[in-house]
Image (cartoon, rainbow, N blue to C red; front, side, top):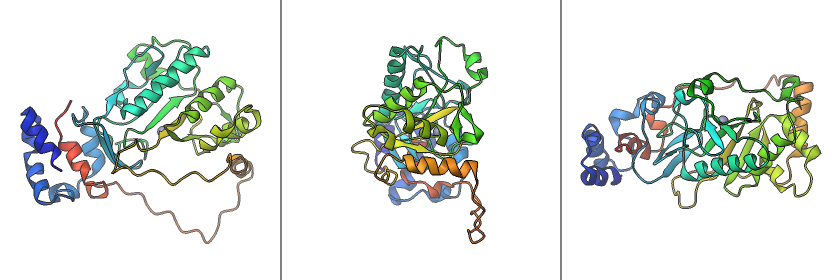
Length: 305
Ligand SMILES: [Zn+2]
C-alpha cells in the first residue's frame, strides 16, 4: 500500500494529484479497497486506463479476477511478430509473457513462417475488460493466432481488417484442411516453454496432436481442450516467481489428457442429454472493485509510465 505514496513523492507526477484521496484512504485501511471505489464496476475503470502503471511488474489476484502493475507493451511490429487489432490497446503483458511471445515468433520464423500474429494479451493495467474475455486480467494470458503468417509488414488498418482463419470442422470435433503440422509446432513450442502453465485450444486440435505427435509427448499435458479457440490458441503462463499475490490455477491432472480430449470430441459429435438435476447457471454479474484484490486500487491510481 505504501508504493503509490513513495512513487508520488519521488516522481511528483501530476497523475498523483488525482490519486491523493485514494492514497490517503488507503493508508488508513491498508488491506481493503477504499470505500468510495468498492462498488464501482471494475471494467469501466480498467477499460479507461490507457497507460500502464510505472511500478515494477507484479500481477495481483487470479486470471479472471486480477490486475497488474508494470505491464510492458509487445512492440506493435517486431522481428517475428505483429500485434493485431491495435485499436483495442490490449498488447500489454508481464515481461515474461512478452518474452515468451517474442521467442515463439522467432521460433516460427525459423520454421518458415514470417512470424506470428498476436491477439489480445491484457489492458495496460490488466483488470476486467469492457468486451470479450473473462480472463487475460494479469498480463499472463495471450491469444496467438493459428494463422500461418506470410508477412509481418501489415499496416495498422490491415491488422484491424485481416480475418483470422478457423481451423476446425464439425463444431470443433476435428481440425479442417487449413490445419497443418505447423500449427502443432506452434502449440508444441509454446507448451514446451517452462513458463507456460496451460494452453487452451479446441478439442479436435488436441485429438489431432495426440494422434500425430512424435518424440517427447510431455508437452501435450499442458494443452487443454476448451470451447472456441479455433482461430487462436490461448497461452497462459504461471505466476512469475516471487509474485506473492498471484494465484495459480489448480494443477493439471496427471497424464497426457488425450482421453479427456476424445471425450470432448465424442460429446460434440453426440451431445449428452441435458442433466435435469443440473443447477441453473448463476447469472454473470459485472465484477466490482470489491471483487478484486485490494492492490488493484493502487494499480489504478499509480502514476503512468
Ligand atoms: Zn484468450
